[in-house]
Image: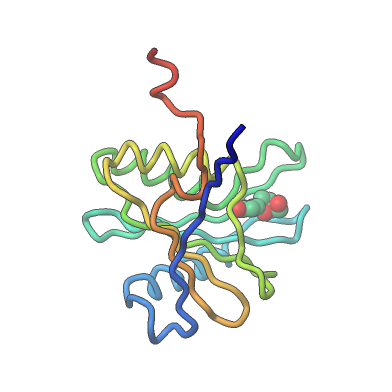
Length: 159
Ligand code: THU
């Protein structure tokens, strides 16, 4: 038997002033999008903003439904909107923010990680994932694959 460890490595900026300006702006766009969340059931508004290769920002917020499972997370709203409107643009980064964040980083759900991974593979380049916490620290995770190690993806379907 041998033990295999999977590591998650991220860069943490203690202050926004140290972080790349484009990512601070992307978080601002996510914060603006969060104000348009439709979250009457969870009361947990989330915003996401995707930075495309052409510099455009496509944002989204969580959209819930009285039939609970039908709701969609902010990340997937943003990524699917980006894919639908700009199918040829890679997504360089996605920022995610939640209204009720505490000292813990908002952490994208498993379904969103799976969709982030495919957006990254589709674009053919790494996608940074930008997170923040209540103190205003900023974390940059260098790839969707980092957030979803040992994943299921399209390569497994084509064997
Ligand atoms: N939510 C997101 O939008 N993104 C996440 O990464 C986690 C959860 C939403 C889904 C639901 O509308 C609410 O937050 C509570 O789970």
